[in-house]
Amino acid sequence: MTSHASRLVALTAVLALLVLSGCSVPPEAREAPGTREAQSPEPRVSPSPPFTIEDRTGDTLTFDDGAVLPSDAIAGWNDARLAGDEWTLDAPDEGFGTWQYRSADDECLAVFWQGKVFDMTSTDDRDASDFVLASVMKSQNAPLDGEVSDGVMGFTFEDNPAAEYRYAGGADDRGSWVYAVRGFAELRAAVYLTVVCRSAEAPERAADVISRVAIHVSK
Image (cartoon, rainbow, N blue to C red; front, side, top):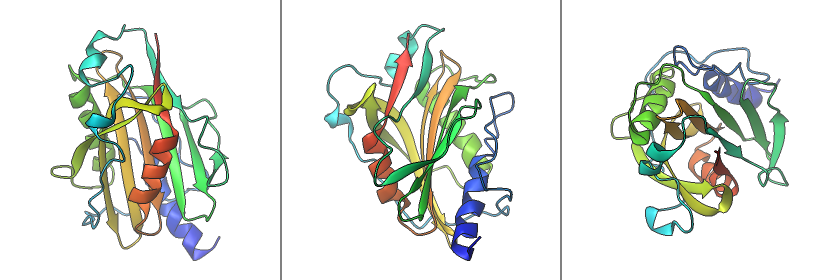
């Protein structure tokens, strides 16, 4: 394995450590046997979501909308439009609710996760999203305060940017990463996306991925 590939694998390994006690924990990303050294990286990027609230059209999945979802609804990802020239499926879902794509230039990975969060204590979706995000960032010793913003991505289909989520990112000397998280308090569930790169390009690559995918809810 090349040194560049090793760096990307080291970053990706952390994504497997979704530290939510009692939740469905994804296995380690394929080809990622190591773990990231514990430290507190200093973020060098200020990511911005690719859409704004004003861009929403059609049916919505706002944080408030989550309160009226039936408790037996199932939230997940629609990534049907992602695979292509820019992104290739690198590790399919093997029944654990996680899978990943690799960029065509082998610089970045996009890791998806969907599933139940059995210890969910939040009463609204914004707080539920931050609960999941804080747990993931805690696994990397990454700071949370001041690094999170609201974003809007596709709801049901990628061309309907109407699903609110929480967005954060950071970087250190090994690369950069972006988190996009939507928690569902009523469903005790979450969907989670991370784009990790061995360069500072994670925000731009994440914007591309997010523009091609959507959150869907089966009622």
